[in-house]
Amino acid sequence: MTSLVLTVRETLRYRGAIGQWSWVLHRLTGVGVVLFLALHVIDTSWAVFYPDLYVKAIAAYQSPLFTIGEFGLVFAVVYHAFNGIRIIIFDYKPELWRHQARAAIAVLVLTLLVLAPVFLGMLSHVVDFYVGEAAIAGDRMLDVVVFSILEQLPFIAGFVGVLAAAIVLAAVYSLISGEPSSGGKYPQASPIERFWWGFMRLSGILILPLVFGHLALMHVVQGVFDITAAQEIAGTMAVNGTIGAVPSAVEFVYHRWSYAAGGLFVWRVYDLFLLVLVTIHGFNGLRYVLTDYTSGNNFARRTAVALCTVMAAVLLAVGGASLLVPLEKDIIEEAMAATAEIYELRGEALPPELEAFLPEDP
Amino acid sequence: MDVTFKIRRRNPDALGQEKPYWQEFVLADVDPTDRVLEMLHRIKWEQDGSLSLRRSCAHGVCGSDAMRINGVNRLACKILIRDVGEKVQVEPILGLPVIKDLIVDMEPFFDHYKQVMPFFVNDDPVPADGRERLQTQANREQFDDSTKCILCACCTTSCPSFWANGHYVGPAAIVGAHRFIFDTRDQAGKERLDILSEPNGVWRCRTIFNCTPACPRDIEVTKAIGEVKLAIRKGTNVGIIETSAIH
Image 1 (cartoon, rainbow over the protein chains, first blue to last red):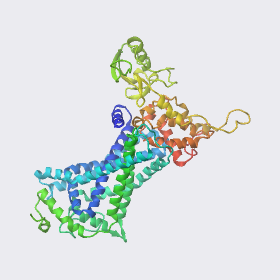
Image 2: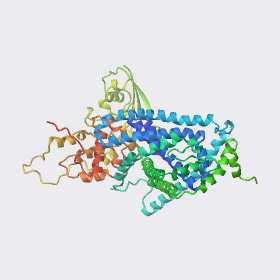
Image 3: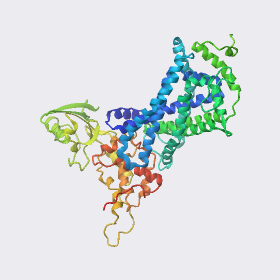
Image 4: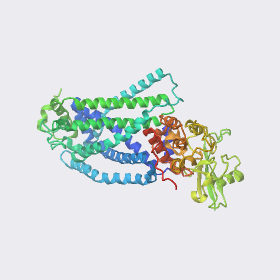
C-alpha cells in the first residue's frame, strides 16, 4: 500500500511529460474496463443460468448510475485501445521514440473524434428512453438506483469469495515454499514474462476489431435501453418479444446466441473469442498493476497473482459455459415474472400479458 | 535578482529533523547564468553550513549531483537559474533512501547496475598483433549512445515503476547492459538478456518516457530499453538496431 500511495503522490508531484499521463490513463482505463468485464460476464451468464437475475441486472444497467458508467466505459475502451496501439508502435519501433509525445496527443484527439459520434448515438438512446413511454417516473428514480446496487450484491459476495480463495492459495503457497513474507526477491530466470509481454501486444491487436464491433453493435446500434424493446435485434433477423409475452433481455440473448449463419452460431463464436482474449488480457494487465505495488511483500504479491488467476478462471468457466450450453426456450418464460417485477418497481402500468406472471399475494 | 530556494531537508542525527521538512532560503544578487549548484554552495557557505549535498566535478561529468529540481530530475551543475526561474524547489531524487538532506544512498542503484554484468566479456585469445579487437564503424555505432551514461541515477529515479518497486532493475542498469549486449566483440550477451528477462528486468518498463528527458547526457534511454526488449523477444542482438554507418 505504501508503494501505491508513494507512486500516486509522486506521479502527481513529478513533472513528467505527457507520456507519464498516458500511462496513468492507460492504467486507470484498463482497471476500469476489467472490473466492468467481471460484472458483465457474470451478469450475462445469468441469462442462461438465472434468467430472473439477468432481467434485474439489465434493469440495473438501464438506471442512471450505470448510464453514466456506460459512457465512462466506452471512453475507457476507446482510449485504452488507441493508446495500446501507440505503445505497440514504440515497442516494435523504438527508434521512433521522438514522436511519442505527439503520438500521445494524437491518441487523445483520435479518442475524442471517435467518441463524438459514438456518444451522440448513445445519447439518442438515453433521450429516447427518458422522454419515451418507458421512462422511469421521477419519484421512483432513487428506488431504481438502490435496487440496481442491491441487485449486484451477489456479485460483490462472489468477489469476496474469490478474494478469500486467493488469500488461502497464497498462504498455502507460502507454507510450501517456506519463504519469508517480505524482503525476499523475485524467483530467478523465468521466460514467462517474455511470453506475457508478447501476448499482451498480440491479444491487444486481436481484441481491437472485436471489441469495437461489440461496442458499436450493442451500445450504439442497439443500446442498453432497447435490449428490452420490441424491435429487431442487432446482428440477427429476429425481433424481440416474439417468443415471450413481452420483450425481455433474456429473449434478446436467446435470439442472439441462436442466430446461425451458414450453420455457424456467429455471435457465440464471436463472443467466445472476445471472452477468452479480453479476460486473459485484462487480468494479466491487472496482475501487472497489482504486482507493481506489492513487490515489497511476497504474501501480498502472491495474493494479487492468485486473485487475478482465480478471477480469470472463474470468468472463463462461467462465461464459456453460458456460451456453450444449448439454449432452452424455458428461460424466456422464467424471465417474465422478473419483468413484471421491474414494471412495478418503475411505477409503470403492467401490460395485461404479464398479469399471469405476477406472484400471488400471500 | 533575488531567488528563493525551497529545499527538502532531513537530518537523522538532529532532534526534530529526522522527518523530511521544507526550508526556504533567499539569495540576493543572483545572475540568470549562475548554475543551481553554485547557488546551493552559496546557501551552504553563506547561510547554513549544515546543508548537505553531493557533488564532485561540478561540470556534468561525474554524475554525483543528481537532484529533483522544480519537479524534474536534473544535475544541479548543468542547470542555470534562467532555466528554473526565481523560485527553485530542490529535493533528493526519489526511490533511494535519503541519508541526509539531498544525499541519497546510491548502493541499491549500483547493486542493480552490477546485476547486469557491466563489463566486457571475451575469453578469446587477444588478436595476433596484441592490440585491440577491431569492429566496423557500423557495429560501434550500435551502442554509441549507451556508452555516454555517467550513472547519476536521474533516469532510474524518474521512473514510476522504480518508485513503486525498488527491485526493478531500472533504466540506468538496462542502458548499462545495452552498452555490452550490442557490442559485437562481447560474448556474454545471452547471460545479460537472461538476467533482464526476469520479472524485475526490462518487462517492468511500461514505456512511460520519464527517463529519456531526465537524462543529462541526452541518452535515448527508452529507445535503448526498447531495443533490449526486442533482443530478448528475438533471442538475438543481431538485426535489432539499424545503424546509419558513419563514413
